Amino acid sequence: MHSALTNTSLHPLTLDGSTGEGGGQILRTGLALAMVTGRPLHITRIRAGRPKPGLMRQHLACVQAAVAVCGGQAEGAELGSQTLLFTPGAVRAGDYRFQIATAGSCLLVLQTVLPALMLADGESRVQLSGGTHNPMAPPFDFLERAFAPLVRRLGVGLDLQLQRRGFYPAGGGELLAHITPAALPLTPVDVLERGPLQDAWGEALVPGLARNIATRELDALGQRMGWTFESGRLRQPPTRQNEGPGNALIATLEYEHITEVFCQLGERGLSAEQVAKRLVDEVRDYQRSAGALGPHLADQWMLPLALAVWRSGRAARYTCTEVTQHTATNAQTIARGLPVRVQITPVDKAMLVEISPLLQAGLYRL
Image (tube, rainbow, N blue to C red):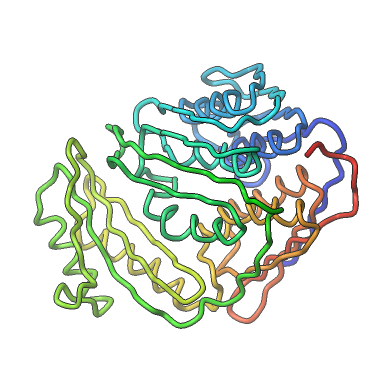
């Protein structure tokens, strides 16, 4: 696989929501790009690749959050809409509170507004309520341990505090994000190697459910990974008040240069042993590759790094285990919205992502 993506759009950012994997990521990345560049966003065929296309409640929450953060305007911001015209205003640092209906993911709303707030003119605090451990979305633990440390390496302060977990379908989770923009221009960083493994552990979350579910999951995980309770590598964190019901099995691998987090959610009809097997398969896939970032982190990291490349004029690179269709679609969207080139090439037992600036000064605000 080899692709080089460049930005050729000059005025409004026009996106086709059916491109590539055709999901909500195109909308979220598009909103973020519009806010940081000041370009209006016109997106059609929103989530055309999904069984229920158009804006669902959590996608509408992302639009509403973007409007609040920059004082923008949105036409077509209603449930089921497949067309949106978003006109951003000036991004404003401040204190924000966003409530996502039902168990919609808090983290996807944060993903939408974080790029703008990390380039704002002051600190921001964002209180989010909704889901923290959702299917098809990064869990809180992933953002706290894997994503946030990378963002901090750009010079941005990002502190995440979990106040209460919220599982699908009930929701009820609460988290706080404290965002401090970099004092100097964002500093791109290369992340090419993991470095030596320094620690690894698994934990089972079972608020509102029978404790033996956690015991079975951890036993199965420990047998496959060689982890034990005695070594501290198998853990069951305490439940916070009013959490659950829900179940998540999480593996954390701490390397010298990167921390990766993998998560499998329990679901009705899936045994504890099957949940553990799915998690181990995911970890083993990562361990077999030489890429520094796993598939989800490779996707999440691309936009913050591209912003640093754009603002600094310096190229940056990272390796990852694979480039999913989701990540490839995100790369295409970013290259349409920023004056950067995203190049993806296979290397030994990994993929190399290179983001470099284009010399198109004067086309963008900020």
